[in-house]
Length: 87
Image (cartoon, rainbow, N blue to C red; front, side, top):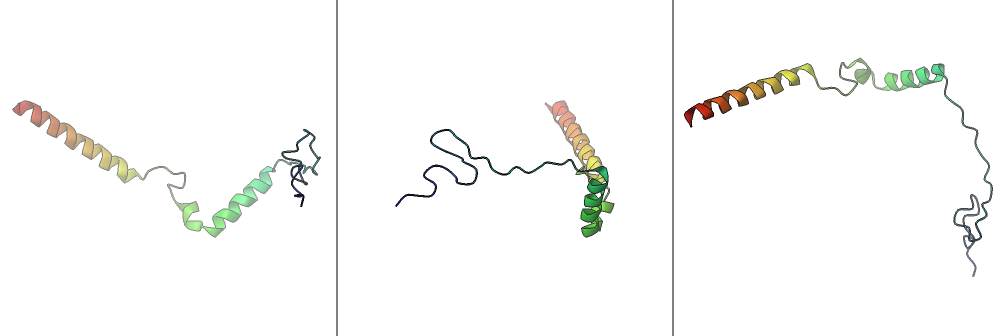
């Protein structure tokens, strides 16, 4: 019982034993126009309007987190200075 994949993939010729590749129909790659890119982004944003209006839609941290990090850093430095004075 011979396998139909004995000589590789019948569509693309992958793993053909004799090194010959069967030509698969090629698809023409086209570059998306600026208009089509904008239309795609508008369609995505219309599905999720909260993310489109969000100030952190680019993935950056909210402003309050910077204040929290600086506050923790100042607290850490103050504690370290207090500890070094005691020693």
